[in-house]
Length: 211
Ligand code: TZP
Ligand code: MG
Image (cartoon, rainbow, N blue to C red):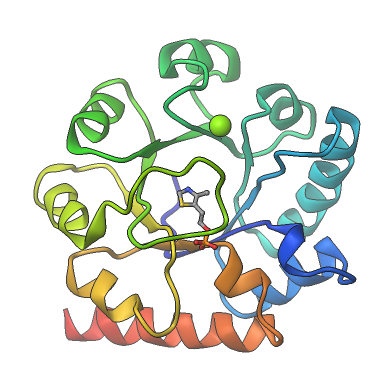
């Protein structure tokens, strides 16, 4: 898959009164280089409609588009991939459905899950929640930056750190070995979405130069 560093997940609850596509376009213009539609409450039909609009937007900017949970919606809109949790369809079954060319990302919370995802052919893994987050229901306890260090030392597929990442703590995440970061609230809940993404992009680029 095309590499990425700044991953934005949708979270419409964080921008009441603002249009989903407008917010995500600002994020992309600020440097977001992969977008995920995550919607745990809307009807399938509404998720499909949002996915269609986001597919159009991401295609315009050449940014990969991932759909959380809904494999059927991902296929219907020709998304670039899907993101699955530990309780979703097993990777092998999902791979059978989407075929070899789609990106499959898996959320992991411990090194055993990361090893399994790598062995089973995931394209990338999520590593988190690093810090406390209010953006996910029934979330497990923070795994802390110690889990980033473990994954960085052992796992060879791309991994993205997620969960409670903010401008004020992102340096800890990068110092632990993460090169890709993923956020909901800090990005889509920002007053100036583009400016926040530009700041994250600058931090990531600076870190690359120092590495
Ligand atoms: N998976 C692990 S933590 C999380 C998800 C979807 C929520 C991340 O949201 P935020 O607002 O960046 O903490
Ligand atoms: Mg899921």
